[in-house]
Length: 133
Image 1: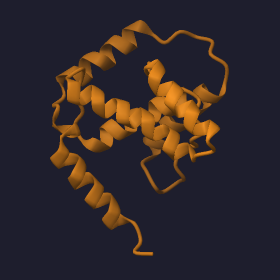
Image 2: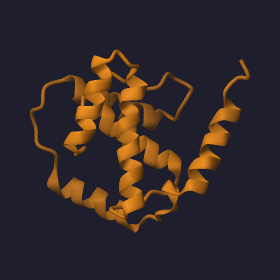
Image 3: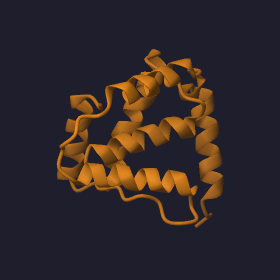
């Protein structure tokens, strides 16, 4: 569950008319903070970003799932499920057993995914993938 201050910052950005990706950036930032603090880990910066985007979608940020061909089928299905959860009304409480298992698995992962070096490397690779224009 995202922290209240993160949700508030995302709502503020929505009121200012900023893009959904900017609003989702708050959740990604929170995730990087969690890894840096040692709350849990991640295998790579990409995984940490994916966790943040998933939290954003579930919190109601209007961030649609990626288009076909851009990511794997499972990632897109998961993103679609998260998006629909966030757009609908809050009904069922999340499974405590599943939450515990996820948290335990993330605790076993390393903390270097949020390091300055790995984030810098990820940013450079992402920039290289984008077009020059």
